[in-house]
Image 1 (cartoon, rainbow, N blue to C red):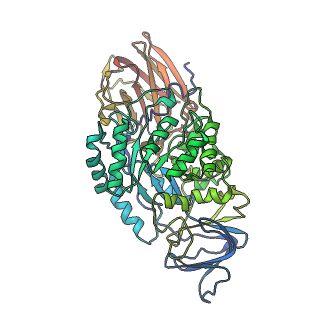
Image 2 (cartoon, rainbow, N blue to C red):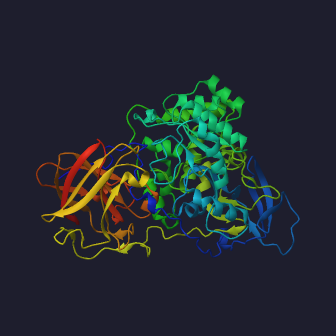
Image 3 (cartoon, rainbow, N blue to C red):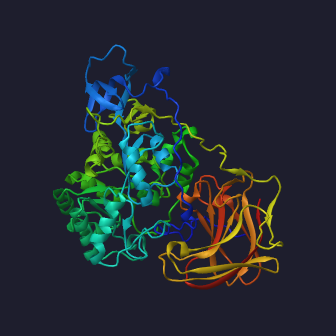
Length: 606
């Protein structure tokens, strides 16, 4: 038996998604009316919330009334004179907040719906398919009933060939020097990018090495963004890159760093420039096993959590020894103490996070870093809106959009109360929060009652599911190759991993549903078993579950020796919320580069 912990060989920048090209965006859901405290039915469009503790985006105001009319805030004050026929919500014992703004997400699949169900009414996306941008602008400009958060986005990111961001399967146009910066930025503006995101990442913080943009190219991109009237934010993961980005005129940094603590003098210089920082503590602390999101999940009704949220929250990065999570917290403490603007952002749905849900964990982490309750909440509302120039959101004030979050208790006294949600209003309409949760949805097919065995006696036809396909990094512009054949009743996988993509891979993928990436429910099964032999190399099994196209697949290594051997991998070794939900199993070669050959036979899920 080959028993592993499921995380060997994984590194933070290796976000290998063999079917990333299959990412799709969920269609909007129809929304019935919601409900509020004390059995009241939530009013919509025009109503008042009375006698509530209000956080208006900057300060707490006690015993206040908020009058909503046609999806916008009409008036705010204490003891407002309201029309007799205006529906009212009793706000006593509750806190009313602006809808949250997550300052760092990546939009895939159903993440906009996941965000809204947890009170995140707007997301600031730091890299997604630029094809989403036109529709996002139309949706966010309307005051209308919706099941999704508003999307503001950088669209495509700026990175080096083979650099961070090229591994996700999304379209990327890398830069090789400063001469192309102006045209590149102009193209992003025409696509609808709301700001420009630039990657300064060489992998050193994670004990690795990947290509990164040169200083001159970063400077040219920042200058070009400003010439086009756009903000320029920079992805960093180490102190040196952060100092350089600020010196070059970056408007914001999207991540804090954990290789070293910033000096108080440098923190004060950051404040003088006006730069803001989106620390993304949720994903960084998760690297070190400190998952605040999992604690929030434990407090959350299961019916509110989607399968994708569970899977991404349960997935894990492996962090090399050396850095310390407390360094990241200390950097936030020093930046905040110096007066640097802090914007709350989660980097969801990366491993260890869940879109929407992790925002409540991020707020708790900011409190751990020394921010007071009103500062924590401002980081997720008014400060985020101001930093990214997001209009009409982040505050409860006359004329702003009625994106509102009503929670039980006094959030000023206890910031963890943000997760105790009573009602969410988006554009003045109540949001229904229930989802299918962990229930079997129509998209997830049942597995057969009997054994599921693939013996290749009938060729590549697996006898179950859509079947076997080649998978390589060619879909990301790489040069690795693979081919499949059945010889003497076994699957033979041959190929070569080559330079040309930052994270080469090649091999075979088995789609278990009737269509590629349709999930199948293998509840009651606990082990993946197969026979293998090969060239003695180490290979990787990747398990794709529900919502797999938008998540990082958990992996388990195996060795294909010169003689046939049985490999048994407990499904629980795949670090995912529910390893019995399987859409695909990939068997791939990664490092080292070069030719490879291995065989598979008698695959069984039992």
